[in-house]
Image 1 (cartoon, rainbow, N blue to C red):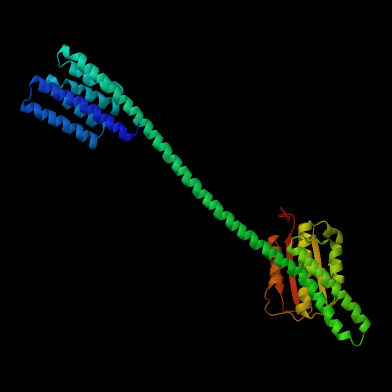
Image 2 (image 1 turned 120 degrees about the vertical axis):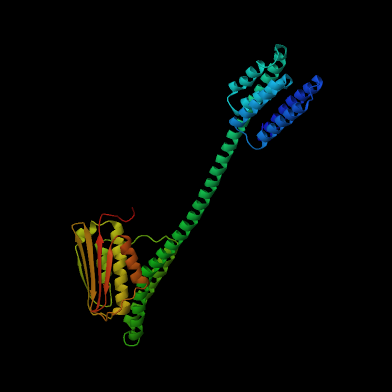
Amino acid sequence: MKRTDVSIVRSIVKAAIWGATVATLVAGGTAAPTTVVLVLTGIAAEIANARFARSVAVTAAKCALFVLCVAFDDSFALLAATAAFDLAFDAVPIFAALPVVVVAALVPIELWPTFVLCSAVAATTGWIARRHADSQRVHTLALDRERRSRYHLEETQRRLESTSRELIRATEHAERTRIAHAIHDDAGHRLTGVLMYLRAVRRLVESEPGKSMRMLDTAIEALTETVTSVRETVYDLRPRAPSDAAAIRRLCATFRLCPVDLSLDDVAYSRLDEGYREALLVTIQELLTNATRHSGANLLSLDIHVESDAYLRLVYKDDGVGSQIVREGLGLGGIRHRIEALGGTLALSGHSGFVVRIVLPLGKHPPGE
């Protein structure tokens, strides 16, 4: 039963009671002006109560008015039924008996069966209507809560989808950056070596053709390896290169620009986590590539020191041209990003040759965690 249905039931009950009351007054021939005024006042009170002021206090005042009507003329006895309906609907159902008891004291005993029966039916109808109204109210509140929950769920889902899209974009950007650094660090280093070989071949091709052909074969082999490495990097199939102390020594031994003075404790270095070793190997490779491209150095030193498994210190120095203002391109920027991601620090100086100092704490945030 909806709220409108309750209002319809109330209107039907009230109309029936007032119709029966008016019919009783007309049949009894009591149509005095005072009676008409009381009827109109009672009907006005019903309308005002239904439209504007539904409360227990107003219902009690209306019941008092009906009692006065009965005291004036016992033909109004049926109004006890409308009072019983209102009290059963608006207040505690037991209160519906009060107007019946009061009216019973004011009317002859022969009228009791009629108005008591009508009052009982009206009170029962009012109680049923109230139960339906309460049930409808609870149902409406449940629907409102469900509607709010659905709204919050949809809003949360929209935020989650937005966050997922942002995460996907960030992941794609990070992956593109990783591939760019991988190509730059590996392929760039290899291509620099190939370029040096080709320049040497051009200088020696007339004076030492045999040696120049061997260098050309080496350049072709290195270029083939570079193409393979780029292909594997793009498809994320590149196997991890060895990152132990021997790999660093090989890298320094094959450096062609100038001698490399390497200081490294192989035992202490081998105890480092593989993630640290890989980061350092790529960093050293990039530093050597930068030296080949920009330094013009005659001597290069590389000091790698592990202090009690607490931190690692790497110092790179060369006696090249240096730079008053050090600009970090993709290579140096990649080194800084890689070291800071591991919780380390990077310091650069180009006033006397080129110097790079790296301090990396060990054990706090192992790579891969």
